[in-house]
Image 1 (cartoon, rainbow, N blue to C red):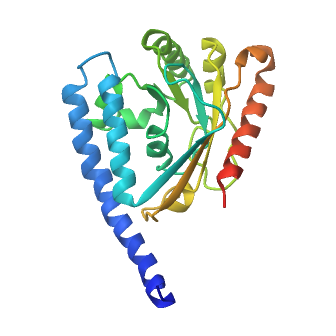
Image 2 (cartoon, rainbow, N blue to C red):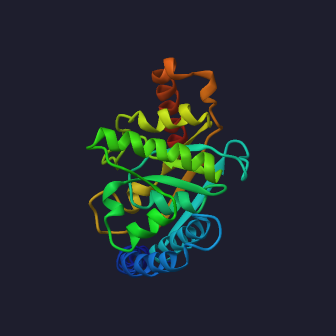
Length: 251
């Protein structure tokens, strides 16, 4: 392909990715959230909605022209329970994780998502846990609910320890909530490094650039080796591992 054709093809991919990808984010999210709401009562709590979330995620990636390449340092037990902790720079981190996470996983979501009609109702029905960081009392209750959900449903949980999407290549300071959750539940932490999502769609951008995301899953870290008294060391260790995993996926 000539340079002129290649130069024309790339902007066209961005145009189609932006129009079709955002179109699916609106229409597809409404459709699948409605399906989850109507049939979410089927089977054990959250299982059908977890399936819907994976289907929705594949749709987002497909219609946006985004391919995900996962890699695992060590095999993870699909029947096991973990606390997954990943960096967060783009909306596309969520579908990239939902399509590659082993086993059934819930995630901690900010309160604003639960306030969206249909979507928020479906999330609540699925056993996803809301976090209100402005209200410390409510936040503590949310983490207690998350521990109870882990124990009752036998599922894993996904946490973005930065608390929000970063607008730079540097990781934001980590919130301690996810680490307290891991320590209280006794579950191992699996660090996850996502590379390429900010190139696809950075925070506050409407444009979608089709491309490849790499999701690198690290080896589980036992929280028993640290304990509450060494929480800061645990946070530092997880942060370092996530940075290493991001670097492995970066060009």
